[in-house]
Image (cartoon, rainbow, N blue to C red; front, top):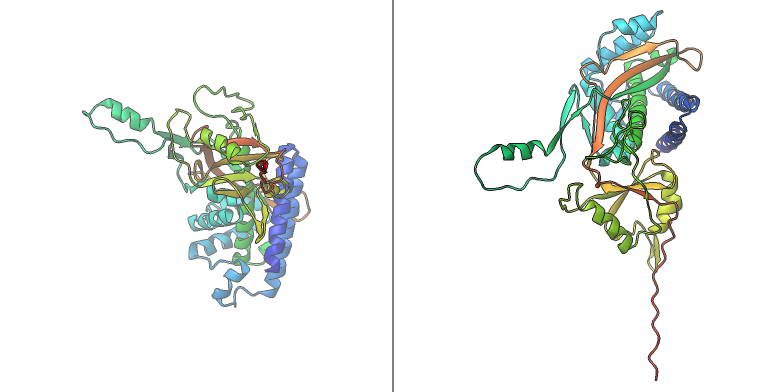
Length: 397
C-alpha cells in the first residue's frame, strides 16, 4: 500500500510538471519531467527485483507486484528486445529487430492507462489496434420514418456518421533505459516498458483530448470550437471556445449551462445524463470542493450539484478553467496503426550517461461528438457554498 501511495504521488508530480512544461512550450522542462520520472520508476523496479525472484515465485504473487505472467509471444518479444538493447550497435540491432509489440501488450497498456487516468475512462477511448480509419456516430439515434424508399434516407444515414482518419495524427513516446534494467529479464523489462508507455501515452492523450488544436498532428480538444462555419487556422488550428465565467453551481447557473448542452449544434434536442466536470487537481481542492461541499448537522456533504455530476481530475486542464460535459461523448481512438507499434532506439538523444532512448510511435485521433456537448468554464471566481438562509418579516400584531 505504501509503495502504491508513493507511485501515485510520483505520477501526480510528473503529470503536473509535464502539463506545466507543455503549456509553457518549454522543451527542456518537458525532457526533465520525463527523465526524473523514468529514473524514479527504474530505481523502484530495480529495488523490487532484488527482493522478488520472478523466475522462482508463485505466479499468483505477480499481481501484487504489478507484474504479468507473459504469454509466449510476449516473452519472445521481450527476450529479443533485451538482446537488441544490449547490442554494441543498439540502433542497428533495434532496426533489425522487426517485431512489434504484441497486441496483448497493447491491451495491458491501455488498461493501465484507463486505471491511472480517470479522463481516459470517461471519454470514448477505443483501442483501434491496426485500424487506420474509424467510423464515429455524430448524431443521436435517428427517428424511424414511414415512406417510400428513396435516396434521401440514405443521405440522412450518411450524414449521421463521420470517418475519422487515425494515421493523420502520430503520438510519439520516449523511454530511457539503462543496461542495469535490461539485465533483469523479460518480466521486469515488460513492467518497465508497460509502466512508462502507459504514463507517457496517457499524458499525451490527455493534453490532446483537452487542448489539441486539430492541426499539425493533434486531435481536436474539448475546449475547441467545431462544426460548420468554424474558421480553422493552419497554424493555430481550431479556435478556442470563449470560457463561460461562473461563480457558483446554483440551480439557475447550472440549468443555464445544461440548457446549452441539451441541444446539439443543429438544434436537435437531447436528454443529458452521466455529467462530468473536468478540472485540474489543484483547482479541484481550492475552488471546486469549497463550492460543492456543505456542512450539515450530520457532517460534510460533498459533491453537491443540482444534477448528479462526476468530478474528473486532469492536469491537462489550465488553472482557473473547467470543462462540463457528458461521459463517452468525446471519441478518442489510439492504436499501433499498420506501421506503428515498433520500438526503435536512438543513442543521439540522452540526458544522462549509460542511457539509451527508446521510441515508439502510435496513431490516433479524437474529437467531441458536437460543439455543444462540452462547455468551457472560467471557475477562477467560484465562491464557497454556504447553507442558504431565508428570513421573513414577522406579521404585525
